Every structure is written in C-alpha cells, then in structure tokens.
Length: 180
Image (cartoon, rainbow, N blue to C red; front, side, top):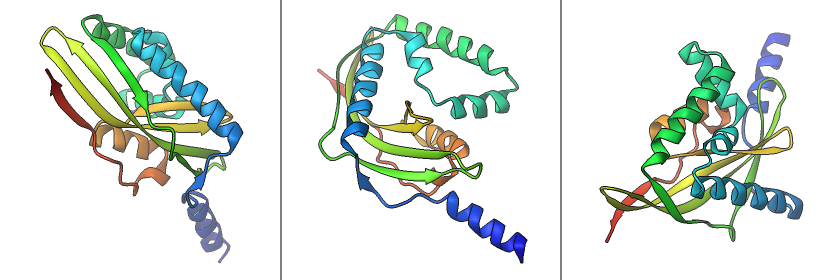
C-alpha cells in the first residue's frame, strides 16, 4: 500500500499545474533573459546561445551520446559557430502580451516553471531569406531561465525526456516561409 501511495504521489508531482499569469518579477526576469538570448542569436554569440540551453537537456543529450557534458557543450558551441558562420539572423521578436506560466515538479522534487513564447525571426543565407515562426520553450529551474527552440518533433521529444510533464503538451507548429 505504501508503494502505491508513493507511486501515486510521485506521479502527481510530475504533472503540470494549471496555467497562470506570470508574476511581475517573473515577467521582468523572463523578459531580460529572452532579450539576452535573442541578442545572442542576432550577434551569432555561440557560447551564449549554448549556455542558454537547459542543463537537464544537455545532460540527457550527453547521456544519450555517451559524451561528457562539458565536451558536449564545447562541441555544440563549435557546431553553432559553424552553422551561424554563413547565416544572419534579423528581425528577432517575441510575443509578450499573453504569456502564461505553468508550474510542475519533477520526480526528484525539482520545481520548474515553464512558458511557451511565440517567436519570429528572419534568417538570411546565400540561398535566400526565410521567415521563421516557432515556439520557444522557456524553463525556470533553480531561479534561472533557460531556452529551447521547439522546431519539430525531435526537440519536443528531447524536452519531454528531460521534463516528462511536457510529454503530453501539444506545441504550436514551427513555420517557415520564403521572404522575397
């Protein structure tokens, strides 16, 4: 019976709560963090972009690839630099007006607040310009905001492995269209 109660309690702790408005201090810290993240993208600051990834996601990815977390971070910085070398990102924007937060707890008791932020930007490469609209998953864990672009099923699955309460969440689609 104790095992059943413990299992039920841990399952309840892993479920998300209901959506709520962001508190003023949350909105302020989230706004500053998103502004910094988007500025890093615009400046092609690979180390800043990679450092904004949730550590829990990096650890899952490191475990899945058998790579030490610090080495993985260095590899991701190098890959991000290479990807951004021939790209330019502009007109980065995000929707602030109707952001809502959800609170959840992981099985280990870690409290997490999460928000889906609508973002838009234009990428320019030698082959043309593309406008992107995609959700940005913002996660507050341990008082810090971290970000993961949700640009398809693979990033959704990665997020759900690290944060099981996201497994049943239906994310808005990521859209891309050519810009003339």
